[in-house]
Image 1 (cartoon, rainbow, N blue to C red):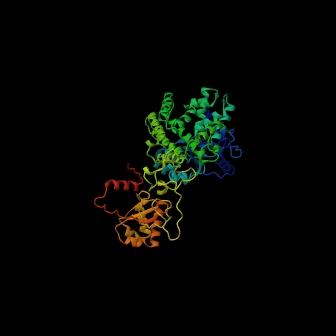
Image 2 (cartoon, helix red, strand yellow):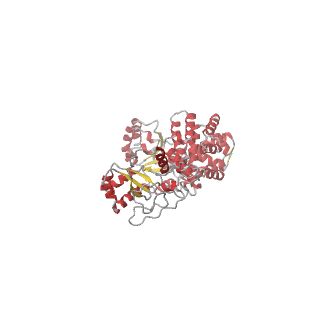
Image 3 (cartoon, rainbow, N blue to C red):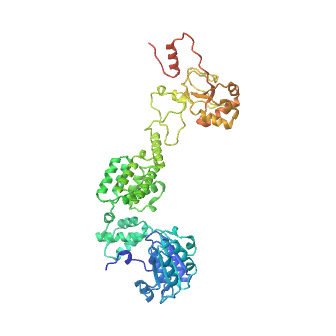
Length: 567
């Protein structure tokens, strides 16, 4: 009868175990020195060698001719344990023997001495499946078993074990086997069997196994049944993959936000009987590789891929920003959880790729960050005009020539001044001197360096100061008296002036002092990020009787920066 590869090539000594050098070395040293524990706990993911090491340890402690901690596999004890004729090594499946009665039977058996071997060894697999009562019944025996008994517990879910059990065992954590070690083992087996495996196929098998040697050898068995020459295409066809190109096609559709192309590709893969859950998992792995390439200077050690594919991944990663990659991974991870919960596989996958192609359909934080990043990039490149700064002149007064990009790629620029928006050719304002609240207006129409703060000539247009409430909040801490006077006031921006409108007569006397004016200017600067001069807005005078409405309209229009020509 044919024996599958993972059973036929199960390691028989610690030296043959791949990927767990620290554990095998520690166990061999204990066997050489005779410092054996009464209870061991082997924990780790599936296919990492827990049961294999447990069986090797059971043989090694009873071997008549041990070799540097390894069993000889030639004496009658080793051969009897291998073929099951020696009953002193007992394997228990805790998934089907998880009751209190099963553990009570075990407690009675441990009192009997071994019939042939030196130690009676109990290997309890999937021990986390025991019930609470069974764990409690095992505690005393596990802590102080007879001298001729050794317990070896194995589990893939160590977090389900009570702390009382953990404290009574010598624990060994089996890590996932590195893809390089799995590929080396596959090549080793291929050399001794009647088939060949290419290096790319071995790496792909190792990647699909996700750190489990048993999964890799099981998939290798299927590939060999398909062809005696196992190539990367053979592995892809056997595992239900669509090849590596389809991942790059989906990525291109996501980058170009072409939902139609992505759905067409999903439909083609579904029609070819591709598993949607595996497709989703591979896409997550694909974007993980892009994330690593964007984050790590030398990603070759963290990505298992042939050199040609690694170069394609580098080129693809250059087309993405990191927030977009993280958003793709989060959407796909959520979709994978729903796929595993029994959702409609094709529909769920189609919804996921649509969210990737159109981030505005997704309200998650990752999607918002992706959209903000895209907007920032557009602003830096000049593809989208920057929003007008607070206090900027109306669009009617904007210059005809195109403006420079709002946010250069090197560093974000400060918001443009209101006077700059109205008169882009004017030079920058001079820096403030001691005793002044801010720089003097330079080149603003209708103003002069000696103009009083109350001046309101025909200069730049006045716009409401939307952040005046923030200035008042700042004053409530820095200058409570000024804040009390200005409660209920409003302000407008005109050029580099902040003109304050208030009915409180005490304000004029307070703002007339240079110290208070500077304090107010500092509060404005802390909110807006630039210096302004402080003034008082005059209340509009009542129109004189018999005034010309047309003249009033022309005068108001010119004050707003609109040149009205009368013919």
